[in-house]
Length: 370
Image (cartoon, rainbow, N blue to C red; front, top):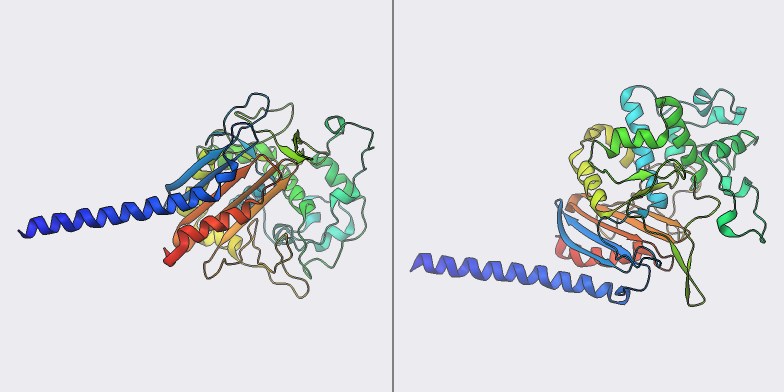
């Protein structure tokens, strides 16, 4: 009789467990009901727990010409989610002994103006360099020129623009100010110090070892994006392709394309410390401290920042996260390391705030502290 009771108990326990999983999946699906369409740009959503997929759904199409449905292999532009890869590239060069966090900008570029002598690699990584924004320094395109004909600024041109300046926004290290200029320079530093291009270094030291075979730093005319998603904006009720802008060609601040399938490998590498040891990676997870204005989220909420990652907790849960935002694309990667939970949302439409959606998912999968 006892074996029968034990069997019945196991069946009931399994049934309850399965019901709980199904209930969470249904709640997760309900968040994205409005995006179910085969005629609009879309998004790809993934929830990982202990490296296993708890929830994966794709919605919409990768482009409005072919109407190809979004799937886990579609490559979206990550925009500023690129910064975590740029930071890892710098950390690998530090691991190699070719670079140090306290090296100065002028140590890498001896012809950089005097103000670069006060800027360290660490300050570039944690957005405390005070560099002027290259977007404000570059020539503004004529409104009469079609968007797809506007020249795109290159990393080398950003470097030259910054070499023409004589000062920074504030004394380096005294304040925090999100800096795309800093991460473009970090990409050029990777190229200068490693002896190969930024994109090739990412491929050789990060993407290839992790079997992220379809992820790349996109350079028009040099490589092609497999299964590429194109970006769109909804303008007065009509979808308009807004895939590229004058700043879309820079690399270290936002040039990587990737997919749910490949980002699963990236998440595993971060958990397993397969690229850097846990102690070496700790620098990326150490919040920067400044005397003046500290880190803030895009909406102005106080935050914390390390190297390529925001570090402010969500509710009581430790979190490392970032967002990406550019013409036609939105993305977020939210990791809760103590719970071994990761949420990734990639979009090729500009009318979505993935971080908000991701936190609604987090509420589903973090409840009861699980």
